[in-house]
Image: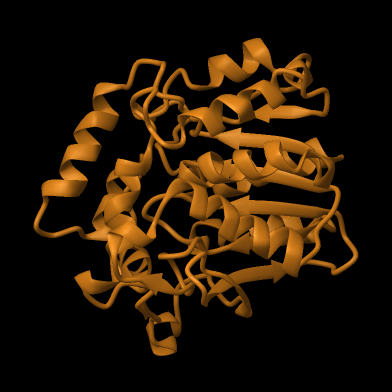
Length: 300
């Protein structure tokens, strides 16, 4: 597996991002290893909150949430998915599969970091990957919160907004990550923040993972990930632990995806589900501290 590693100087002096980098190696599924980056902030003995980003962002997305969570005594683990942030970036699209992403994250969280009693929060692909890890290792997780994400199986209708995004991701000659993230936010992003989202990608050769991700979303029952996501849904249909929905009011891509969880997950009953107002797809970017305060209350 051919891998690129973004030079460290690309991550110097990013706005509001004075966090220490941590690294671990996980099996790449092809006989080698991959280096994954993660943040580890807050008291080492505090309750663990796992924060998982999606496409095409990286853990920079959580920079305004982590201080709120850490100040409340929570230990924040925020990994960069393989292909994103400071994590290694395989150069071939075929190196990336949904199943491999799940296993890379599982290996980091459970084998290397050996996390227990975790509160999970995931958005976008952070939810698609993270919810699978939760469902396949439920004893390691104490509670779940999600925002603007889901567990697609290919059996449900796909929104026009997602289909347009999927087509754009495969046809645009300039896959400008910073601009893409800014388009998914409800409020304008400062140029230095847009630049920070571009930092992991010196050129297009680093973007194989970002480019391929939209094609890995199950859009038909024959998709390779469909059966595993159906199995994960079955786990959540018996999930009695707390399950919180924090979806935003301005995301056409995942609008309505929260209904399945509200209707089918026992642990979602009676929870203080909240619609985050004034937030787009990247609700952490628009309303990060507010989302963090809901998580603090959720952990209790």
